[in-house]
Image (cartoon, rainbow, N blue to C red; front, side, top):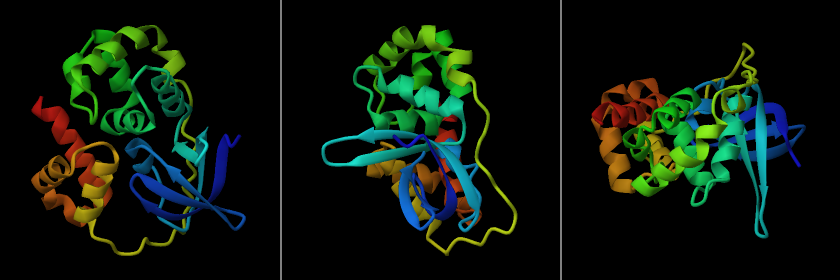
Length: 205
């Protein structure tokens, strides 16, 4: 099983990235919390990996911290929560904010995350209360960001942001609406748009 990858960040398109390790390209899906910490393409990067082996695919999920990976793994143990929903949780709020919502029984905050309805949110509160604090949040950042990175190729940040939100579980119409509301930040890139769009869902409720 693959537990860690260290190599060159060859490409990144939220929530996907490509890591070149000695000439072999590994496609990895990562939450936005990890994307915000990535260097530009061409730089060296190290990510912690959770590997899922299915009959038709071998899937890799990458995380900047052990806390993120641990929370992802705990979420997968909850009935009705799959990898896509778990990534949506980690993209929509930090591990610390998630732990606080669970501890306080803040169902309203959880249902604002993509793909999570009230029943799932209530189940998360009940089943994850005993898994908080050090067990969920321990671990240090392992992403490496050396200097000398090359710039990424020019893309359409609005289109990329909408695609990323859809991949995280938002419906296309909702993703477009969220991005349109913060489109003024397009000059800062797709990751800034995604961050602003996700933050806007928290402010509204």
